[in-house]
Image (cartoon, rainbow, N blue to C red; front, side):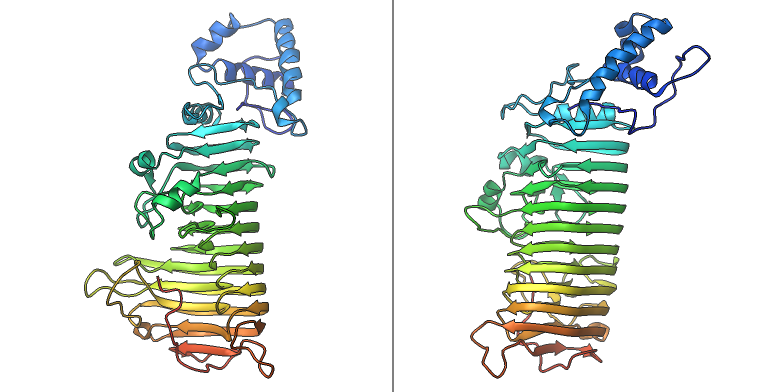
Length: 484
């Protein structure tokens, strides 16, 4: 990893040194900045340079030397050939590509030194992450990932040391956050969670302290692209308490052993976040591909392809007592689902107030259009207001007070293994669902229920759906969809 301040890419800090005529060139300030990176404290800088006021000739020499090195850090270079101004030799060595050596302290050290107006480079090697990381409060930082971050397979350690995110019993191994971050994986940078050990030991629903790979937290005005996530420990990542963030060209593959999948391997979840864009995601997993959860607003999901898992999820939501939660203004378009269970589904918690807690809130302004399905395993769309912990007993699916309204499903094509287009179990406790529109959905039924006279899915199962738009309810809900 390196701190690389390239004159063309960054504004340079003011310097106490100046050229004759009080002029400061970009190259000079870059050189001085690099000197300050090499020598972190003022005392170290003085010891490093040996003077407090170098002559202009000496400064020019330093400028030529350091700028010639910086030119070798062009984005067009092979990452393996990058020159590092700081190998983090001062007490925090870089990656040794040795599983027994924890690279997390070196990474944390680099973020501490380069966390403001900095450039952090993960080289084309493997970084072994054996302890949690917190790198938050960053500003104006470029992060380039050319290698692999590999988390250790010590599940006992991680179950004791993963960090709670403050929602459900979820935890993470890395908090990353700040303002104006640019994080690029260039199609090769990879997070590897050593997932199979987790899928074997702790695959039960929301297993306590089983960690997510990444929590993007308190992040604003930022951009993530070209990153691969493979075999994540649990949920791949959560975007939490964040706004104005774009994540595009992201690849998630949480399969193992030739295509097997595990529960709770969501691609990404959003919590308490606004104006988030997911563009050109590819997700192979055994659960929600993208899930918008509590207080997610103004979310755009487009040009994405999902394999195997449950598809796009709105929720779960409405779990906590006395807490008003919402999901509003979510647009999903140009979505492809290959072998997914649904195209999209809504899930809210039932009201357990008689024994545990009550729920409230509302969601709406959801648009889901231009969808192609290849072999969906169930109906393209469902609503369940009966979500619970796995194995919960005596749940009443007509008690949720979370209000669902203003949802549009349009322009859906492809094949499904069902003769049902939608199953909508809306709770009577809040007088059902309002303004549900399903239009221009033509999907071929490839299950045994298909016949020549009725080759397409055509049924709409409804409980408490008020004044449906674009479709006619054909019967009551025969089974709870997506209820756990």
